[in-house]
Amino acid sequence: MKDRIKAIRTALKLSQREFGERLGVSRDVISNLEYGRVEPKELLLRHICELYGVNEEWLLHGKGKMFARDPASGRRADEALQIFKSLRPEFQDYALEQIRRLAKLQEHNEQ
View 1 (cartoon, rainbow, N blue to C red):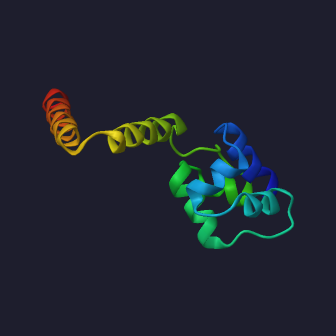
View 2 (view 1 turned 90 degrees about the vertical axis):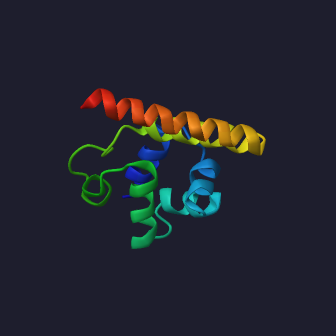
């Protein structure tokens, strides 16, 4: 499993620090996992799957595809959230309204 955890991080082009921060653990925890010094807890494995869109069957047993969903979508969401957080409150309100309108437009076009 240690190799699969490292493969996820490498595929996402994240440092151990970045990978761990998003999971709420330190770089040392990630290093220990990748070198097999500690076994990951079930809760951490589930969090990796949820946060990074990893196929749980692949992570646990090496079967199937690494990702259950496109990891690029998560990166886009992270980028959008960072930009949104940097905006002043009045611009956040405006951006949120525009996103709502886009969602409605998409819904209308899919019908």
